[in-house]
Length: 340
Image (cartoon, rainbow, N blue to C red; front, side, top):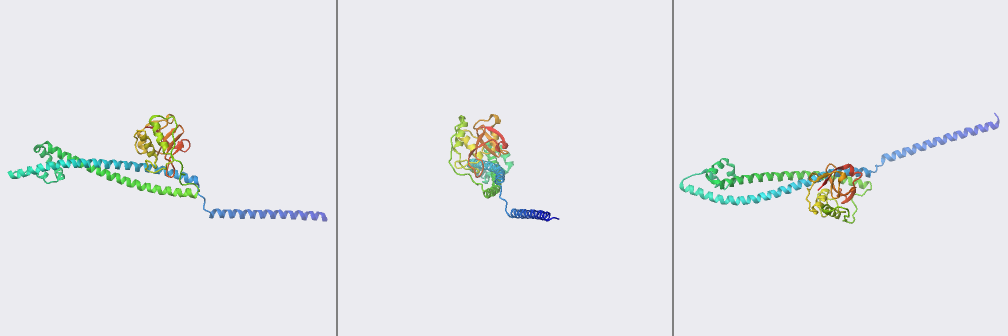
């Protein structure tokens, strides 16, 4: 082989080996990079997703809305039962006074019978100062009806009804109190879950509470009459915090805001969302007017229509009374519309 050809061949072989070396180095470098990246990913804790946290918080909030509604209803029933009990206690006091007067007369009757040597088991029972014993002796009623006149018979029958009513109301108070305690425990559990979600939002770098700002606003839309009065009240609450069970003036839950807004307009609607839905005239979305109520999430949330595309409401824990768009998320949660 000629010297020039040999040199050319040697150079070509050298370049080929050099290129192979480069490829080997590049491959090794890539392998090391991938290995380091994989190891870093495995060791690092993934940053929580703010969107996922918000979604889970919204789901929990729907549950809280319903539990709060049930708590509010139980509280209303408990208060009504206590008022009824107070009325019955007052009636019982009045009846007791009547009984005492009758008792004095019966005692005198027994004394007279004793003097004459007569004995009457019915009057002896009444003279025992034990009205329950008298009421329990049902056979006495027939005897009294024929021998003691209508006045005493009516008194005993009235006392019997009163004792039955008191027992029923006392049982109702106890039942409602037990339900309220159970719902309070459920609410506590959900509040703890929301606290965990707030912690997750914090880790994701998202705010956990609504920023404080100006409170109140002015409704300038076309509503008139009671609807305008209700919206005027609602707008004045803009910026106030959501408070579970709240009916103002410092904070509201969703149904507390709608109830108080319409109360300010002279219209009484029930306290809780399902009852508000049942108590209002249902209208189609195409027929909604400012002031109408808009119901969401299986009757777990309610707001008030501002215009065809917006509503005012108290959203959830950590947010303030605000105006939201119906479009998007809320549109998919709509149950119906009601006009007080």
